[in-house]
Length: 309
Image 1: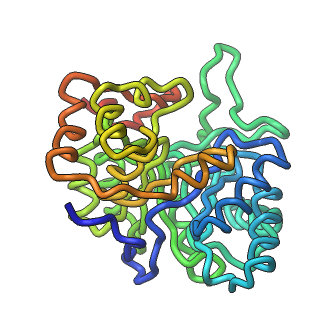
Image 2: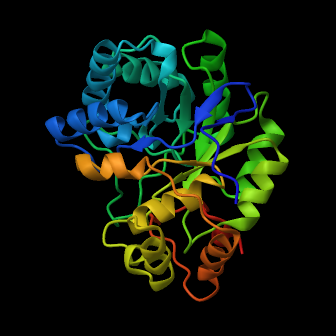
């Protein structure tokens, strides 16, 4: 079985490193700072964050210090951040982007993503505003994610983001976006692992030149993937962790951004394993009997492919 490539080429011509460090749920400043420094020293060159994660300041500080300590150039590190639903009004997209750049302390990011295909009414200090009935407070001033994307396209023209893309976009929403877009998304970041292999979505994205990045490649917190008998058996055969098998499988399909703040796991997650064709097929077959989406917020609008069925 061929090894996963060290990077993939986006439709912009830029290279995105295959394995990156995800930072979702990493909010303790010292932990995220040390995790990123550990990652950069271990060879990672791809760091993923978002406004919604609340850690852009720490992420940016760690990146800048890592560049200095390792004598790297800014262009050696691929940095991704994201526009939150509360920032999705077209008129406020530029300010939201500049806020992320300022918090990161960087002159540019390599990729700026629309985090969800939904806009929420902004409320000071609230990341997920809710209505009185507990549902998400959808922003009716935003006609659709197409107008938010149009504002993001203008950011791309500034050079302060080298590429723009989306997260959590199903095929129907991608079709809507591509009909309106002047710039096609470079990336669609989605939940992707053996319990949710997303074959149709991967095939569709490939046909449109949209690269796929897998978030939650190990499942979510408390995920049964790490105890799955097929995966643990393959891990034992290679003498590695089950997480390494999951990341190695994911890396054959696109970009993978496992998250951890534990130094030993950060290091081991970067060490890929050459899986045999039989092992890859065994992992592919897991979803026939075990299928689950772990990340499924109820937004009040169709988001995932199954929402349209």
